[in-house]
Image (cartoon, rainbow, N blue to C red; front, top):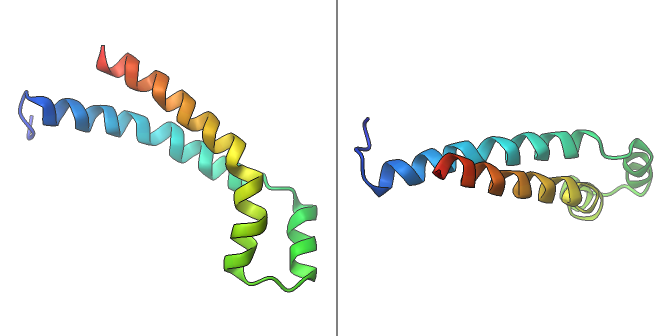
Length: 80
């Protein structure tokens, strides 16, 4: 109601609905990175930034893209 009945409210509702599948899948992906990979990176003394770039991000990208795909379906459902 604060945004009116125009395009702004529609876009914000779709954006809000699409945020949750992406966010929850990203959290799940980062939490389920293989502990062996993390121990290996720790044994190589990687900095936290390098750990994210070289281990966590590549291991979690497939699940993040799954969240994006689900968010696309949610966007269409909410839009209709």
